Image (tube, rainbow, N blue to C red; front, top):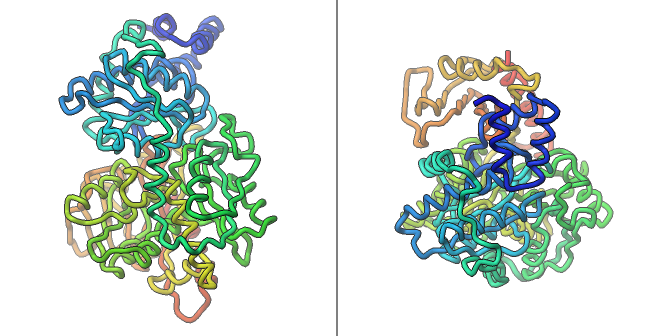
Length: 567
């Protein structure tokens, strides 16, 4: 079937007048390049479900795609005896079309004869992950594109364990989507179906009560906080959580306080991106705040900034994760039965912190679909999960939410900052203490685009690195190669040992000076992602001087590594 015929067939089956009009306009204009984009490879399940630009066709997020995916989910649930009698859960953020997508998902599930509990207002993603287990749901759908650009939306799927789906379940559902026939033939319950119930405020209340347990020092609350949800849906639960914990001085950035799918004050609604926190930092400077906290638009990531002699300092994901983990281990209850976890591309500092506290440590592939499972694995071994984090600002505290949760992480961050202030110290002092105890671990990320003018041979270069890793980078000897494709770690002396993680397209190089370089393809974009870590000893010089030296080394090694791959 040729491109125009495929487009005409899709148009005839599209339930949304907006995308039908879009497709009709492209057909009438003879815009074959735009049609080809929309009918290229269909959106597929990745590290966070399905996500992409809004628009018509199988390669875009639209109501037809949502109905097809949900039909495949419903059929998979119907084939699972353990799902019988359990409801499906549907939530949504405040992005364009999220309300329609959520209603479509609920109506398709109910049309398949399943009971559905649907949030009747925009809700932060961690609350959906929490509610799946609270309701003993068979599965949970959250309509969100997290921190993606304004023109995107997505569909995040949790299974009955409250965790993101993993192989082979994702492949089974993807295959099920291909077997769905015409969208118009799918049974669709009315919006007012008795099978569809609204999620009550009791779920939010249950989440807040559970999250409050992560605070360790409720008597220390002299702290001025500036908070921003970046135009997303996290403000209401985040502010309520901080207020209930006793933080009375919380200022929300007014320009970004309400959900707005256009994200008008930020070029990109991702707190990792330069400029995203500018309004929050300016408000913090004017009000002489002690701490800046930010969530991404769906509330599952946490960002922090602290006052610094050189101006406000935005912390990296590794700094946040290690800082909060050390605080919870030092101040929280428990002993050696506790466990912390992170991913293979995050800083090695967490392992050293765990060893110093005499607690368990786990390491997984990238993504919380893997990282969250360390919590259930720990429980099965009689261990208690304390914190898991990934370098991309994802933190999971405890196991009430088996996914990253920027709301409970914000409370721990505020609790830590207030505890430091009560002792006449700062969060910066706590970070400096980590550097003195374990050496200063500095990390940085780079990206290399593989299309749109980027160096296409870079993908081939990565394959060559897997076949023959370099012996030196920037003049420094490579002392260990972790080839996650082959599943082995090798050294120049011929020593080879198996890696504990499943095979994946990731290559890591450990250098003689203690640095580590890693590279992998992105799971959601045509990018190579680079991870650089250097470790600098701290002797008698100021930590600030060591930190400046580490930043220089990060730049030098990062430049050399990217050049090695792209050249």
